[in-house]
Length: 284
Image (cartoon, rainbow, N blue to C red; front, top):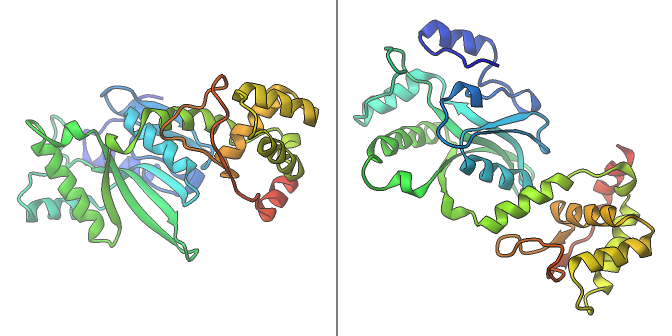
């Protein structure tokens, strides 16, 4: 797809009419797509496993935060590159705090500011709320050249706070290399073949895994022995193990050590498999 033009107010209105920045869940269309923005480093288009659509990210850092949002059980919807509409409200905030509102290059058209992530999260009482998150490298927030960035962030913060939406910055100190590497691996196993999604198989798999605690095996050796016991392939045993971590049936330290098949079996805690979730999996 070609990049869109933002050269006039008519362009903005046309993009709004075409649904950009609108919708929720799988019907949401980001205001900005990868092809709409000149490369500022590594951009990504990723098919979601939590929300069934293609997500657009303009940096590695946005991708990292996306992995955490997909892994979180509390996050139920992820809308990236979310526009701050109406633009007039953002402009008024900028004027009130003495900040020059940005315009599109070589035009007088007010820029449509965006928030990196607008998330719908589930509260402990079962209700839902929206939270806005902007991801930034810490280096972009300090030193020379950071003034303009900080001014825009102040406008963004006040915009969301005026609507009662919690807003905050997430920087690169929030992530560890092992966490991102592990989540990138685990999400590949968020869904398995139907035959491998049976609750009874998962229960038996976990029993075998618990029985292996006393042996000094590598993870690969452990999974091969479990595969032989359950009469499944080694690849299937590997898939079930990673799937159980992704679905929180198994809890391991993902932030401080990489998941390597040649390493010892990681320390793990076992959580009961939800009967309701198992029924849904077996009926779907």
